[in-house]
Length: 97
Image 1: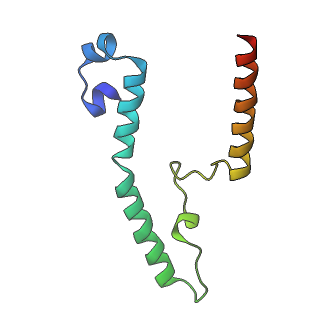
Image 2: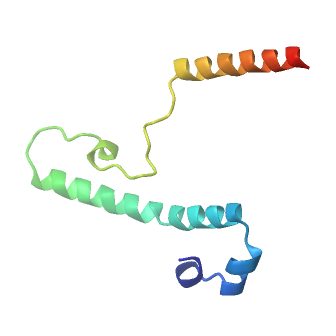
Image 3: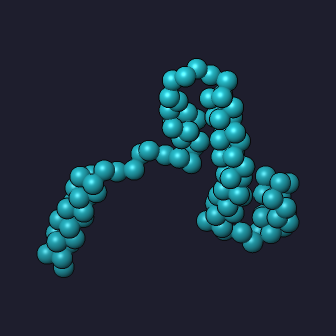
């Protein structure tokens, strides 16, 4: 994909790029297509609603979710719990030194 679709020279891909650079390049490449997919979803959503019944449709982001629209963000309670665990861990490491 990097050589064929993105156009990175084969030699650069094989010998010069590091793994984190490859990951960043592929993420950027796929992110470049997000607006087109979101536009297509919006057009299909409104076309389906125009042809459908009189009920209120769900929000467009619930109608069709894309992989980059994740709902798995931690809650405030989970974040506070993680912070507390990190604080305890840091204090125990300070005592060991």
